[in-house]
Length: 147
Ligand SMILES: [Zn+2]
Ligand SMILES: [Zn+2]
Image (cartoon, rainbow, N blue to C red; front, side, top):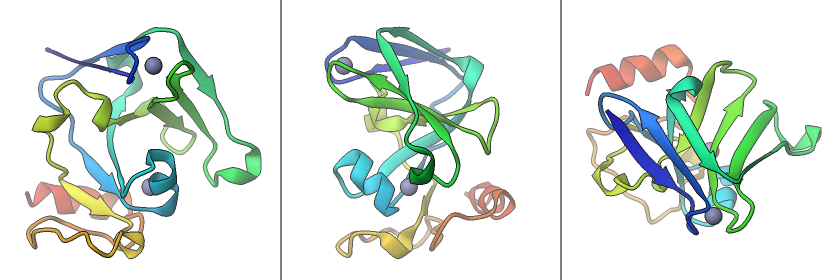
């Protein structure tokens, strides 16, 4: 099945090939607060070839000293919505910005990372796995398997 989404103005649309809504996590790091202009960003790691982007998407890279892990950011030049990024640390994967899904209202994050930088008013239910910073892939997988 596919899940559709797109940017704020509609110039960039995408379809995600997936059996279910993608496993989503919230990142509260300062970069994600800046990117989103909000308290956190919702991300989902999906195989790059399952994400079919249509329309006038632009791809950009930040200056080399701005990112520890060089990433390519994909978004809409008309409305400045970022749709996804790839990251050299996870070849073949795309990190989808889950708030751009048409059905984002049905998504609940499975984990929260970078809680050390979270806005102080954010409170989470105690059953949701949290990490102070970026967890190791193993720790993250273990935490969400316990869901
Ligand atoms: Zn747009
Ligand atoms: Zn972040």
